[in-house]
Length: 112
Image (cartoon, rainbow, N blue to C red):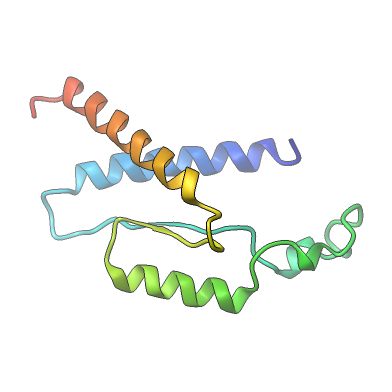
């Protein structure tokens, strides 16, 4: 695994968002989570990661991501999965199942 701290922090943030969304569900605040794919940026060029060749070519072009993110946010869902065709099909089902597990756990811990 190339970046275990990065991966762990993303998961921690995801669960924090789940808890925040749950805590604010009866308010007028909507918590939206955006799931970006790998995006072609300078973070992967040889200047920043010399061991990766052609790193800028990895992932989705930035303009394609921006358009997908905007469309997803405009659709109004709680989770916005921005991906290339078919890329998130398995992950979308996993995210739904993970949300159901979280909801069930939350029900057992509260008076709801």
